Image 1 (tube, rainbow, N blue to C red):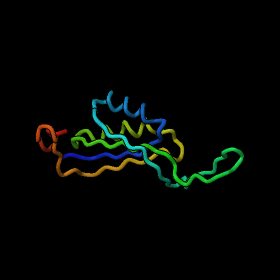
Image 2 (tube, helix red, strand yellow; image 1 turned 90 degrees about the vertical axis):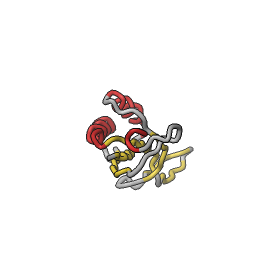
Image 3 (cartoon, one colour; image 1 turned 135 degrees about the vertical axis):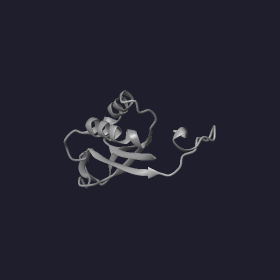
Image 4 (tube, rainbow, N blue to C red; image 1 turned 180 degrees about the vertical axis):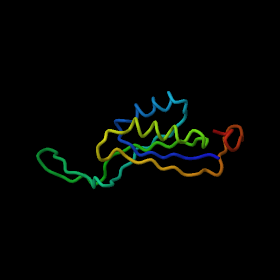
Length: 113
C-alpha cells in the first residue's frame, strides 16, 4: 500500500528536513508555500510605525508519497528535524493513496513511485 504524508512546517526548517529525508533514503517530495493559522491565531507586526495584524502565518507544506514501510521513518525524521519545541512547529498528516501512475512510462502502483 502507498501512503501520502503532508507535513506543514516552518519555512526555515525546509532545508534541514529535506537533507534529513535524503539521508534516511527518502527521495522525492513536492513543496508548497502555504499560509494558515492554528493556535497561533496570527500576530501583530509593526511597519513604518504602524501596527497591523497578520492573520495568516507563512508555512511550507511538503508532500511525499511512499510505500507504507517507509512512513514511520519519514514521520520520525520530519518530527525530529522540524521541531523547535515552540508553538507553530506544524503538523503531519498521513493518508492512504489508492493509485499512482507515472505519466512517462505508464507504470502503476508502487513501481510508479
